[in-house]
Image (cartoon, rainbow over all chains, first blue to last red; front, side, top):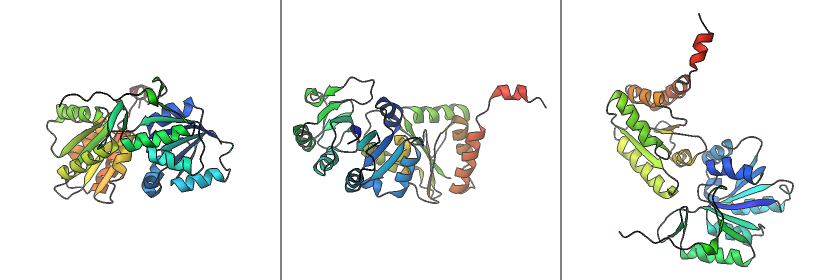
Length: 164
Length: 135
């Protein structure tokens, strides 16, 4: 397996990923596993167009991406793999994708979510998903950009909500 | 009048609008949306939908101006692209916004977008070139 970094980022391909993470992990291939984007031709084209031509880009649904990795086509690439949610990353693991490290980048606020860091918000389902991923031996840490300090996800504690 | 929505990373959108108004006076039918580090994509999408509704009341269409292709503001705007009704231009600069505010009457949305695409790029000049090209 050639996945040098798996990252959960609900913004998928964007500035932080292109300008900081890609060069930091020396990736030459960017893979997005996401149902919604793979179903929107315009957004696919725009995301593909935003990546420099020296980087291979593959955008597909989770099952398409699992098939792609199974085919061996990406064996010689250093791949940065992007998911939008914890459940997508768990589904990919269950589908046979292998990665040693999972980076929590941008998981933003939503109904029922608790804030754990400036860009990581989790609800009970997220925590359960991350537990299951953790049990398979994947090292999960939170870091928005390489310049930030990585913190193991178990070290994250809920940020106290400000009094309303 | 074509509606305008400026959506960017950080406070650029708010500052672009405020600065343009400093130069040409109040600009009606224009909203600014800021996407910061903590912004959720879902919330930003709701804000953009609301802004489009607010400025699109004349039924002449809405032009969305963003800061950078490939960035989150542009990716969020992409969901709203609708031929003839909602258009998008990236790489907003101040001359482009001022021109947009002035040129959006008696023009349809596609004409305005194409005009500004050229105008914005022509607004980038290098004064030293004027010295070198003495005519």
